[in-house]
Length: 195
Image 1 (cartoon, rainbow, N blue to C red):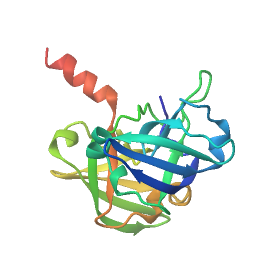
Image 2 (spheres, one colour):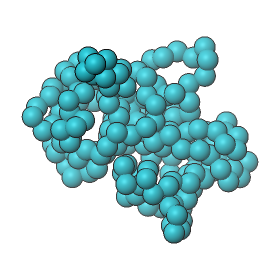
Image 3 (spheres, rainbow, N blue to C red):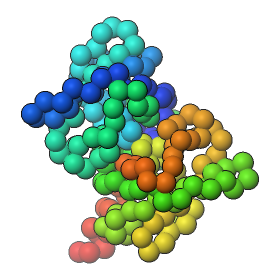
Image 4 (cartoon, helix red, strand yellow):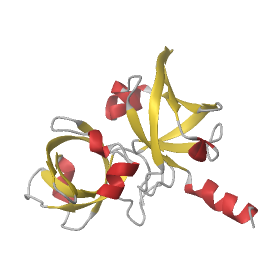
């Protein structure tokens, strides 16, 4: 389980494609805290750390299913990714409950300055938008955000300077694909109400 509070911006150092998927190499000081088999969220996708070099690099295998359901297939060497280690018992839950199970991919449609903040509008599929509510939570590329507006085929979030500086969303531009994870509580509520 994660909180959606990004701990570091990692650099993708390699992308090795195989018949079965992709092995990503990532450079980050967080690698020192990882053991073989530990979970780490990469742009909001929960991956398993392998191939640790004992320093500032880890690798993670990304299966075809994950490549189909996320934007990780678009990363390449030199790409920057949001990283978060899983929540430990006793840690503060400062964001919201994020599982690292991406529900789908959205596309940045518009970015505009709004005082010291930046408003970002994201197109999303209808099967995800039904779980998105104004002032509710959503994870975009693993970043816990509050929804500021919801439309028929999109939603908006406002990014404060801290988020702009510490996450990849500071470089978000129209056309960029982003991983989306809706609030899991909304999915459970829908299931209970449908009974």
